Image 1 (cartoon, rainbow, N blue to C red):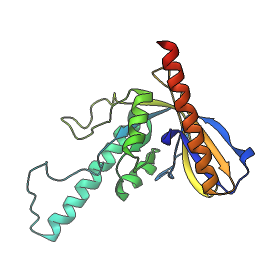
Image 2: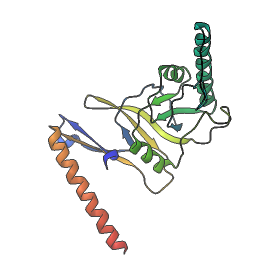
Image 3: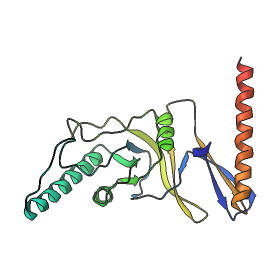
Image 4: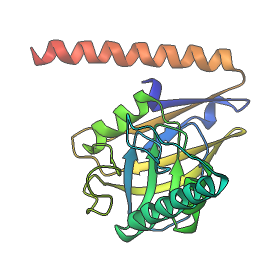
Length: 213
Protein backbone atom coordinates (compact mmCIF):
# COMPACT_ATOMS: atom_id res chain seq x y z
CA UNK A 1 0.00 0.00 0.00
CA UNK A 2 2.85 2.41 0.79
CA UNK A 3 4.14 2.22 -2.81
CA UNK A 4 0.65 2.43 -4.34
CA UNK A 5 -0.62 5.67 -2.81
CA UNK A 6 0.54 9.26 -2.59
CA UNK A 7 -0.78 12.20 -0.58
CA UNK A 8 -1.10 15.84 -1.63
CA UNK A 9 -1.77 18.55 0.97
CA UNK A 10 -3.50 21.82 0.16
CA UNK A 11 -6.10 20.45 -2.27
CA UNK A 12 -9.75 19.56 -1.62
CA UNK A 13 -10.67 15.95 -0.97
CA UNK A 14 -12.67 15.95 -4.23
CA UNK A 15 -9.38 16.20 -6.14
CA UNK A 16 -8.43 12.68 -5.02
CA UNK A 17 -8.26 10.17 -7.86
CA UNK A 18 -6.99 6.78 -8.98
CA UNK A 19 -4.33 6.64 -11.71
CA UNK A 20 -3.23 3.56 -13.65
CA UNK A 21 0.37 2.45 -13.18
CA UNK A 22 2.73 3.46 -10.38
CA UNK A 23 4.08 6.79 -9.17
CA UNK A 24 7.72 7.20 -8.16
CA UNK A 25 8.03 10.15 -5.79
CA UNK A 26 11.13 11.71 -7.31
CA UNK A 27 11.93 13.66 -10.46
CA UNK A 28 13.74 12.39 -13.55
CA UNK A 29 17.51 12.63 -13.40
CA UNK A 30 17.26 12.75 -17.21
CA UNK A 31 14.06 13.04 -19.23
CA UNK A 32 13.89 12.32 -22.94
CA UNK A 33 10.24 12.35 -24.11
CA UNK A 34 9.28 9.40 -26.29
CA UNK A 35 5.94 8.19 -27.61
CA UNK A 36 4.51 4.69 -27.65
CA UNK A 37 5.78 1.71 -25.69
CA UNK A 38 9.21 2.11 -24.11
CA UNK A 39 11.74 -0.61 -23.37
CA UNK A 40 13.04 -0.24 -19.81
CA UNK A 41 15.80 -1.83 -17.74
CA UNK A 42 16.41 -2.04 -14.00
CA UNK A 43 19.91 -1.54 -12.63
CA UNK A 44 21.19 -1.92 -9.09
CA UNK A 45 24.79 -0.74 -9.57
CA UNK A 46 26.58 2.38 -10.84
CA UNK A 47 26.91 2.45 -14.64
CA UNK A 48 30.10 4.52 -14.65
CA UNK A 49 32.61 1.93 -15.79
CA UNK A 50 34.97 0.91 -12.94
CA UNK A 51 38.70 0.96 -13.70
CA UNK A 52 39.88 -2.08 -11.71
CA UNK A 53 38.04 -5.34 -11.27
CA UNK A 54 36.76 -6.07 -7.74
CA UNK A 55 39.65 -6.90 -5.43
CA UNK A 56 42.26 -5.52 -7.86
CA UNK A 57 44.46 -2.58 -6.86
CA UNK A 58 44.80 0.18 -9.45
CA UNK A 59 47.84 2.44 -9.21
CA UNK A 60 48.13 5.78 -11.04
CA UNK A 61 51.70 7.08 -11.20
CA UNK A 62 51.29 10.34 -13.11
CA UNK A 63 48.81 13.06 -14.03
CA UNK A 64 48.91 11.79 -17.62
CA UNK A 65 47.87 8.31 -16.54
CA UNK A 66 45.08 9.78 -14.45
CA UNK A 67 43.70 11.84 -17.36
CA UNK A 68 43.98 8.85 -19.68
CA UNK A 69 42.04 6.79 -17.15
CA UNK A 70 39.25 9.38 -17.03
CA UNK A 71 39.06 9.41 -20.84
CA UNK A 72 38.84 5.60 -20.87
CA UNK A 73 36.01 5.66 -18.32
CA UNK A 74 34.15 8.29 -20.34
CA UNK A 75 34.49 6.31 -23.59
CA UNK A 76 33.34 3.08 -21.94
CA UNK A 77 30.35 4.82 -20.33
CA UNK A 78 29.38 6.31 -23.69
CA UNK A 79 29.74 2.89 -25.31
CA UNK A 80 27.38 1.41 -22.72
CA UNK A 81 24.77 4.10 -23.40
CA UNK A 82 25.11 3.53 -27.15
CA UNK A 83 24.58 -0.17 -26.47
CA UNK A 84 21.38 0.59 -24.54
CA UNK A 85 20.24 2.82 -27.42
CA UNK A 86 20.99 0.12 -30.02
CA UNK A 87 18.84 -2.29 -27.99
CA UNK A 88 16.01 0.29 -28.13
CA UNK A 89 16.15 0.94 -24.36
CA UNK A 90 14.51 4.28 -23.57
CA UNK A 91 14.15 4.12 -19.78
CA UNK A 92 16.68 3.33 -17.06
CA UNK A 93 15.37 2.67 -13.53
CA UNK A 94 18.19 2.67 -10.99
CA UNK A 95 18.29 1.81 -7.30
CA UNK A 96 21.53 3.81 -6.93
CA UNK A 97 22.40 7.41 -7.75
CA UNK A 98 24.27 7.53 -11.04
CA UNK A 99 27.22 9.83 -11.69
CA UNK A 100 27.00 12.90 -13.91
CA UNK A 101 28.85 11.24 -16.80
CA UNK A 102 26.11 8.59 -16.95
CA UNK A 103 23.34 11.21 -16.92
CA UNK A 104 25.16 13.21 -19.62
CA UNK A 105 25.44 10.28 -22.03
CA UNK A 106 21.91 9.10 -21.21
CA UNK A 107 20.52 12.48 -22.31
CA UNK A 108 22.78 12.41 -25.38
CA UNK A 109 21.39 9.04 -26.49
CA UNK A 110 17.74 9.55 -25.64
CA UNK A 111 17.55 7.44 -22.45
CA UNK A 112 15.43 8.73 -19.57
CA UNK A 113 16.81 8.00 -16.08
CA UNK A 114 15.07 7.65 -12.72
CA UNK A 115 17.50 6.99 -9.89
CA UNK A 116 17.65 6.29 -6.15
CA UNK A 117 14.66 3.94 -6.17
CA UNK A 118 13.98 2.21 -2.86
CA UNK A 119 14.27 -1.55 -2.43
CA UNK A 120 10.47 -1.68 -2.03
CA UNK A 121 9.96 0.13 -5.34
CA UNK A 122 12.41 -2.16 -7.11
CA UNK A 123 10.65 -5.21 -5.64
CA UNK A 124 7.25 -3.88 -6.78
CA UNK A 125 8.49 -3.26 -10.33
CA UNK A 126 10.02 -6.75 -10.45
CA UNK A 127 6.75 -8.28 -9.25
CA UNK A 128 4.75 -6.43 -11.91
CA UNK A 129 7.14 -7.03 -14.81
CA UNK A 130 8.95 -10.24 -13.89
CA UNK A 131 12.21 -8.65 -15.03
CA UNK A 132 15.60 -9.05 -13.33
CA UNK A 133 18.18 -6.26 -12.94
CA UNK A 134 20.56 -5.73 -15.86
CA UNK A 135 24.25 -6.27 -15.05
CA UNK A 136 26.31 -4.55 -17.79
CA UNK A 137 29.81 -5.36 -16.54
CA UNK A 138 29.75 -9.13 -16.90
CA UNK A 139 31.63 -11.23 -19.40
CA UNK A 140 30.45 -9.26 -22.45
CA UNK A 141 29.37 -5.62 -22.25
CA UNK A 142 27.99 -5.76 -25.80
CA UNK A 143 25.76 -8.82 -25.45
CA UNK A 144 22.08 -8.56 -26.32
CA UNK A 145 20.07 -7.04 -23.48
CA UNK A 146 17.31 -9.49 -22.56
CA UNK A 147 16.47 -8.10 -19.09
CA UNK A 148 13.98 -5.55 -20.41
CA UNK A 149 10.35 -4.77 -19.75
CA UNK A 150 7.82 -2.59 -21.54
CA UNK A 151 6.50 0.68 -20.15
CA UNK A 152 3.28 1.74 -21.87
CA UNK A 153 3.95 5.33 -20.79
CA UNK A 154 6.47 7.28 -18.74
CA UNK A 155 5.89 10.96 -18.01
CA UNK A 156 6.38 13.68 -15.40
CA UNK A 157 3.58 14.22 -12.90
CA UNK A 158 3.15 17.20 -10.60
CA UNK A 159 1.58 16.39 -7.22
CA UNK A 160 1.13 19.70 -5.45
CA UNK A 161 4.62 21.21 -5.65
CA UNK A 162 6.43 17.87 -5.94
CA UNK A 163 7.61 16.55 -9.29
CA UNK A 164 7.12 12.80 -9.68
CA UNK A 165 7.44 10.10 -12.33
CA UNK A 166 4.29 8.32 -13.54
CA UNK A 167 4.91 4.95 -15.24
CA UNK A 168 2.61 2.30 -16.66
CA UNK A 169 3.92 -1.24 -17.12
CA UNK A 170 2.77 -4.24 -19.08
CA UNK A 171 2.08 -6.66 -16.24
CA UNK A 172 3.06 -10.33 -16.50
CA UNK A 173 0.55 -11.33 -13.79
CA UNK A 174 -3.08 -10.73 -12.87
CA UNK A 175 -2.04 -7.76 -10.71
CA UNK A 176 -2.70 -4.52 -12.64
CA UNK A 177 -1.22 -1.72 -10.50
CA UNK A 178 -3.09 1.53 -9.92
CA UNK A 179 -2.03 4.37 -7.63
CA UNK A 180 -4.35 6.22 -5.26
CA UNK A 181 -3.83 10.00 -5.03
CA UNK A 182 -5.24 11.26 -1.72
CA UNK A 183 -5.85 15.00 -1.45
CA UNK A 184 -6.74 16.97 1.65
CA UNK A 185 -6.22 20.35 3.32
CA UNK A 186 -3.30 19.23 5.55
CA UNK A 187 -0.93 16.28 5.88
CA UNK A 188 -2.60 15.04 9.09
CA UNK A 189 -5.97 14.59 7.37
CA UNK A 190 -4.34 12.76 4.46
CA UNK A 191 -2.52 10.43 6.82
CA UNK A 192 -5.79 9.60 8.61
CA UNK A 193 -7.52 8.85 5.29
CA UNK A 194 -4.60 6.71 4.15
CA UNK A 195 -4.59 4.71 7.39
CA UNK A 196 -8.37 4.19 7.16
CA UNK A 197 -8.15 2.98 3.57
CA UNK A 198 -5.23 0.66 4.34
CA UNK A 199 -7.28 -0.81 7.19
CA UNK A 200 -10.25 -1.28 4.86
CA UNK A 201 -8.10 -3.06 2.26
CA UNK A 202 -6.62 -5.31 4.95
CA UNK A 203 -10.12 -6.21 6.15
CA UNK A 204 -11.20 -7.04 2.58
CA UNK A 205 -8.13 -9.24 2.12
CA UNK A 206 -9.00 -11.17 5.25
CA UNK A 207 -12.64 -11.46 4.15
CA UNK A 208 -11.76 -12.87 0.74
CA UNK A 209 -9.32 -15.34 2.29
CA UNK A 210 -12.15 -16.70 4.42
CA UNK A 211 -14.45 -16.91 1.38
CA UNK A 212 -11.79 -18.83 -0.55
CA UNK A 213 -11.47 -21.33 2.30
